[in-house]
Amino acid sequence: MSGFTKNLFSKIIISMIVVFCSFDTFAAINNIDDAINKAGRQRMLSQRMVKSYLLLGLEVTPDKTKSQMDAAIELFEQQLKELEVYADSEKLKQSLLTVRKHWSAFQKPLQQEYDINAAKTLLSDVENLLAECENVVTILDSEAGTSKAKLVNVSGRQRMLSQRIAMFYFAHALNIGTEKEKSSWQQAIDQFDSALKELIASSENTPQISESLRKVDAQWKLSKSSFSLMDKDNFVPLIIQVTSDGILKNMDSITGLYSNL
Image 1: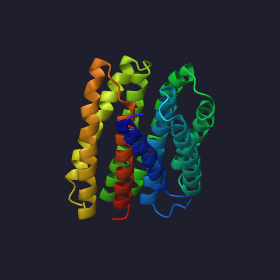
Image 2 (image 1 turned 30 degrees about the horizontal axis):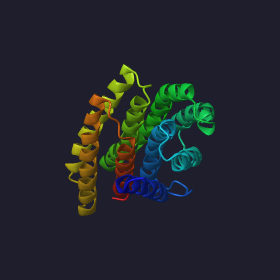
Image 3 (image 1 turned 90 degrees about the vertical axis):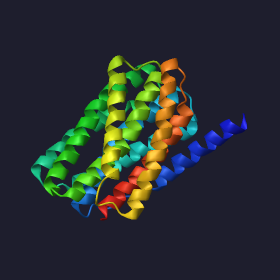
């Protein structure tokens, strides 16, 4: 193994450990901003689970990738329970019930050996789970009705987009991505670009938030430079894994900072 490859593997392992150590352990939701943060993280986890499953198909650090996926499954279940306890409106309760019903079936193939047909099914089914998680965030955002809540939502959505972009990238590397998925991938890239500019321009940013956003911007530029290789069927899943998890780590921290404003 070359020194360059070893370095990449080390970065991936460190990235996986740091990202999940930064997430909250089980804790009651104390306010609506915290609820929006965790509900928004559910969107990200839906994409992260499938992204990790596809990465197993590419045989990229399989042991660490499996651990990453299992951790995402566990955290999704934990936060769903927290949101169910927090929910006090009938509209929110019903939305979470829809997520719960879908989640029960969705997670089963994730807990089995990798199968390309299951990968295709998950790639399709995750769109519904994402939409259901998005609806939960929309309800909470509407109930909050503050500019801070909007920033928490937009910032939290960047976490999801970082994993969604990587998920579609890996689907194409496996040659199971359709034209529809390629279109969704480009849309996610455009959405991330637009939202990052919006966050950078926010007048509510603290110096710490501004500095963290500058780091994300640098990581994002590195990711985009790697995307251009796809046109020549040159895929670099190791690099995309490292950069997407780096962006996720920073955006999760930024979302927490917005939540605490």
